[in-house]
Length: 626
Image (tube, rainbow, N blue to C red; front, side):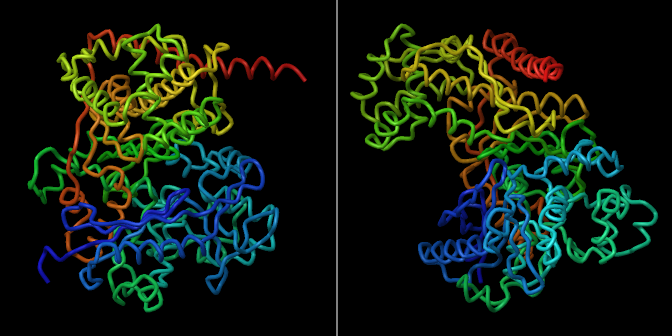
């Protein structure tokens, strides 16, 4: 088999869908397929899914991608899986066990990552002050697995006893594929308190001399999960492997038949989706064909790069050769993403979801959705164009704006936007090709910024994941008026984009203050990574280059495919695969340090920080009432 015939499948299980992609040895997507999955939401903060439905969607996606690609399954060298950090509950026969207190239907056996039912349990675990919490930013999130398991014990005791396997969703996928119960180091370290580095372990842990040495029995005992210790940790994992390790004997007969692949096809140990996204982008370089086996050189480059995986929520991944402790930020985790490197993980709990919430709940949304459908555009593209129009003619009335966007063709609209962003994203002063849009990089930015000068948003509508690590925080909007026109929605949308950028800036600031040395952001995701207005705001507000890898919207799938490539031994290590299978498409540079744009963002970032302080002050005042 020649190198050109080597393909790798990456499966990405997100919040709302399953995607399976086929990649060549250069990391380019050949074909993919996507299937939606359901979420049951019967009460506030309760979000549940079905592992059965998820696996069925995996099967359909892989088979359809193979069919569309017309690739012979014998040329698929390996397969890897990535998924949200959701908790799957299975009985001794591998069958689902219900996690729902409302219908107790075993079909719903997955507590979704965004489920916040275990806030009280998370607070109690945090209150122990246990030494393991040092590696979680000193605060456990209700999105982690231990609070969820504890909630099940305290609220669904009979179901808790029935569970034989508590698995992260990504581990469930490899279990279905191989029948191996080996857990991935990635979710265990990041979501369950497993300690992977010898320097983290007590002498008693080291004496166990097996994979269970990563579990600190005193933590589990202290938080009320002593039975997991007495059982020898079998329900949470007694065999552990690093991401990309080859599992079992590859695809088992049943899974191979379902997926349409060869029995024994290598299966890579899995990852949480955000971490797979980091793997899928951080190796990208401007220089092509520069494959390097020098790990020290690669690791030095990784330390300068922050992975920003934007989707429903956003995750920030910062790597370092030594542990860096950042209050309110998860980690440092050892070998959770890049082998032998420490990982600090922050995040914004709602980003794409927040933007969707703001836009779809506005009275102008139905009109814009219909218009976008007629023009075969996304609503956000229409809103970006409204901001563009207002930057040129700030005194346009809502009627004039509507008339303009109704009369202009989608191709002309896109061309005008491409012209201005091509130049503004480079931070250069150049006239656009279209004589009707003579806007310079900084001039365009300043005119846009003027539109939201007095509209400020704190984007913590679903709490704050980092650096405050407070799921009870809520969103705030300052500067609303009585206007409910398309213009008002566009400004609110733009202010939300900016708020998300200030959240990213806050993350970079606290990471670097703690000891990281981030110099650029590597961004992947769907709409965020292709939204030029957002990219310009991100680069200018944070003050560093933003790198967009080739086919960035498929980065999680690509990272998963890399796990299959390493499992097959096609590449010698994960860092080598990262470099070989990713490349740079675009770099957005910020305006200069002395620019008026930077000064504006500096001032608005001060308001962003002040809004959090104000919310805390409001709570303190109201705490003195009833």
